Length: 63
Length: 210
Image 1: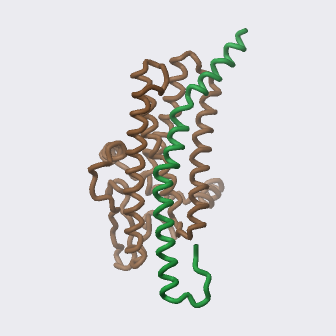
Image 2: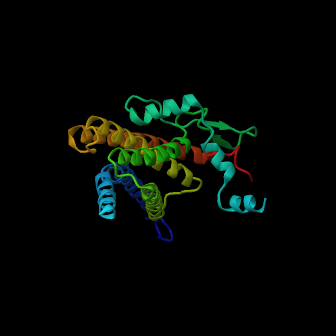
């Protein structure tokens, strides 16, 4: 998070930047792996559910 | 004419042109990199300095294979919708409403992803000027892997769905390839941004109007 100290001495700002960088790196890997895994699974897997629902609706309509 | 001006107010059309400045060879090479990113090098985007030597800009996709584009994500998005409905049709479960529901689901997925990304970037104080279109482009590349998963799994399972060991294997591979692709691209771009900040390099200066 941004350093809100008024002076922001060189050591504290350097520490904040390193913390920020590590958070950004963690976020990059979380986004690339976990979030993309969930999204790709959602887009590719549940077609059975969608097709099954559409199929059941069409059958009920015919009946 | 009024509608064009109003549209230009919300969308930078000249910046969009940068992302659709592609060639046949770029599309083929990019698809190969998205599906097989393991040995691709280098990942850094190329830049060119302007005539005054002060400002610079990223090369368009036609001239730089590492430049993100929107042609492939858009085409993959449309192909995904058509493939999904084709599979439903082959199972005898096609209905016209399926086109709308699938496209709506995919659009909402992308929009939520972008919104979440922007929120996290704001919380982490990541400078996001002129990167929104890059994020949309990166977000769209996943459809290539999803299409590969659906196509291969459906052909192998003879319309039995994307389950089974083949479906999961293809899904796992395309997911890992997509993740590796994103990490390599974004990490290299971030590293380059530190250098670019010194020379104020823009993402698409020749196409942006001042």
